[in-house]
Length: 202
Image 1: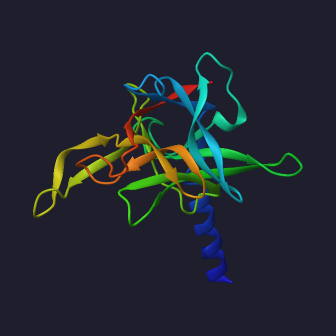
Image 2: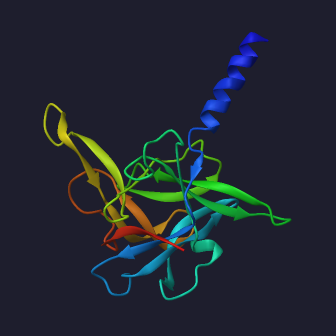
């Protein structure tokens, strides 16, 4: 009984880790490519209860839709929702109109050098990301440099923004957001175009 109580407490702690949700927002691309610049990313079907993050034709001049609306969850104990690691959520609507929160995970293909963002229900496999306070850009903190030997800690944590838009085939062929693995070189996928991802509240 004592072990069960401890287990339930631990479950509660995990569940409460990311319990401070932001207002709804869209993820807008910044790019040198005029076809991508200013467009919104949206959830796109990749399988049963599985969505990717695809390029859409929506811009800030069009009304947000369910599939381009996201939230960002951080810990309520964090001093600020900015520059704090958190999770990006999209709500999957199922039969009966019930919303199922689905968290973003960067899924890795070991034969590629890019990771594809995928939404699935829950947060067990979710990838933590950060939002910059000065520009609302999405990034992943980089505190260690393994391009040198031995690997060294950076004097100051960097804000890595290795975002690209590429033609990918997770389950279907889409133009999706990806994360370039590693700090050097461009993706091996020849279709990839460099982008920044910015949060813009609805």
